Image (tube, rainbow, N blue to C red; front, side, top):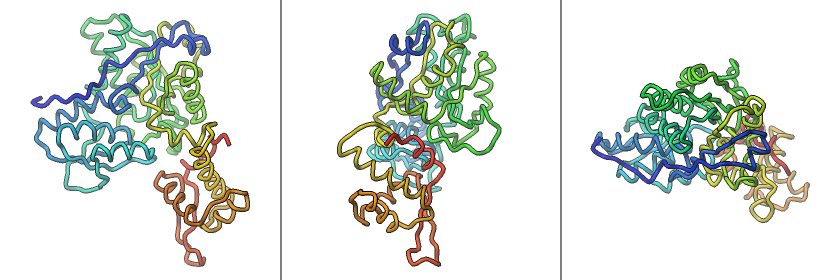
Length: 377
């Protein structure tokens, strides 16, 4: 490639987690902390390669389609390359990630004029497979088992590709067992179409079969973990090891707890943490035990979600009256502003009802219901 972009990605720490391994009852546990990449996500490895290919091709603008981490990461590298980036998001997206992407200059657009670049790209895989290579270099041996947060399957298959190539080149003598940490109802564990998990949602199934191949090829398995388990493991990681992960990134640790007996004889075990909790503080605040002004702000939003869950269909003024009856001082204007924000996050939706004087009424989305179930207030 003529252009080789870098923001200092890769070479992330492999951290021995003595406290956590005692809790899970493992012989040896490491966390591969990908939150230390430039934009706080493992995707930076793939973005460096993919954005370099785009810049080398001479394209002046591209349209990115994917989740918040992908668009933020590619936005950073394309900014460095001087390539204009448009973005269209797959919901749900944390507001902090859309803000991060906008700071890199990504404009929200569904314009058809620029070529679409998604994470389902061979250049992305080439960057992501370096995680496997680094693990072997840092451990000076092959991990016995690697637990990977898995949604679309791209990351899991990329690691399998990396380990497989090391085996083919004679650099290692065996493959680690790969485990996919997946959300409830994930296609790797369920044939049902409905999948409404808040964390690790499956927006695209292109690489699901490749993910199955990775599990079969290493004798691994998919491990279901709930949204609540991921949130719990965000706290455990932070309080025991000082590692702040976003909820989907903590799925690997949740899976370790789930299959601890299966992993007891494995050494070393590596849990992959894919992204920083700093990218999801706004979302984490809904389900935390934090106090202060920030917590009070989220408390009102939670009460709005509860009001909609109890009384839907309900209009904004009805929500305002209900909140005031419950002793939460607010105003109709604030309630409207909060509802607009919750709508943008994909937590509520509205419908116009012609037969009512206040035409717009609100309902919870499946994602909104999932989030409400995690609330600790």
